[in-house]
Image (tube, rainbow, N blue to C red):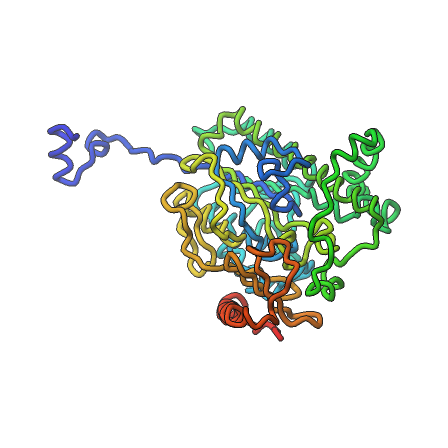
Length: 462
């Protein structure tokens, strides 16, 4: 309740601060700590029930925030997925759906300068720093164009080393709020085949060998029983599902490995996840030790998943759950604690509007993503969306929470329709089943409508 003096001043349109010549200090916006791994599948967290990986730091982060179980990348390969997460826009909007190392700068620059999260936060008064693996469409463009100062390109220990140093020297009362984007390479090094890459080790660079070789050597120190107890089981959907059998040669493809080689591959993937998790633990510990955790929003995610022998496939690229569904945890001031969201579909394009919304920065117009703030803060339990889109170099997919319709642009296959409620392993294609004709038609029409917003060039869908 205002006293008499305050009431009189208020009625005259004068604040108590200005009357006494006091400058009102606005509350400092929260910092953002954005942590990304490469190729970490949605279920590669012990808090997600996976007993073959040990991820204590990320488990603790989930306990202090919201973990989204149905989060999807915008594209199941690195560059287009990362482009979507840093700009809020599909890479298809600038004509790319794959890892192009020489993009057209005239296409990339206008988008990143207008809506990249680095530029948005820098313009709002944040110190914006990037450390680790870039993985963006660069060419003549560099990370500065995305609005960040680059601090080191070591993407193994580098981000953690930098974070520890930065937090130790940060002065909340004097320094600008910060946006740190920390990007790790692993568990991506599984791509080098757990030692089964034909180039290993003679034709790979030393940094490409290091993480893989470490666990090849570590494996030799384990007893047979210890090793066997750490190997994840063969996935239930390991057989090609028919629809994707003819798609093997598109993207990552398959491997002609023995049972022992497959076991070692799945074991190695878990170890690489734990390897990068330890680095993340260092970062979160340094944040807390510096007294910055209470005013820092932490976002953890990965750019895409990993097939891990499902459907007989390895690596990424495919429009299947293992490659497209990724972890997402957000924690910090004002965010609910210990919430697992298993209802809402979220996507990589949601991160820019979400982070802007959480700190009060206007969300750029024209973004197709949704802010997750209402879910994070408990204002709502249901997002205002009915489906998401995932694009790739081989096709486009629409997902409504139960059904996934995919229209292919490469290969002999025209389309697939999966019911992931009754068939979570995506082993049975319903696209030619008359019972599903109306569902397929509805989803295809929605997909085509959305694609007109995503890309200016009509996709070559069959």
